[in-house]
Amino acid sequence: MVYWKEILKNNQGDAPMGAFDTTIEAHAYKKGLIDGIVMFTKTDNKGKLEKELNNQFYMKTIEEEKS
Image (cartoon, rainbow, N blue to C red):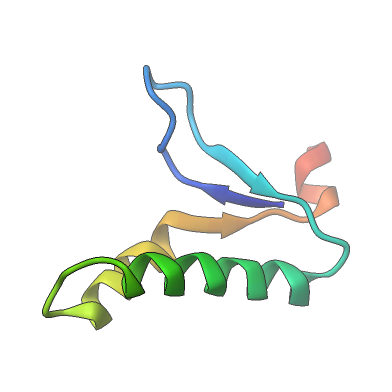
């Protein structure tokens, strides 16, 4: 599962973005989200924005979800 940290309003926590069968699919989804945001954001420092967004998205496995 891919999550977006602290994006929900009223301190509701992290937003679930998508569930995947493999970590490869989850990594590709995360990379696609970041690339899309960076591509359509007007900034001179796209590398810095990409690093910041990389910290905002995280993944959990099924085992981590259960615990």
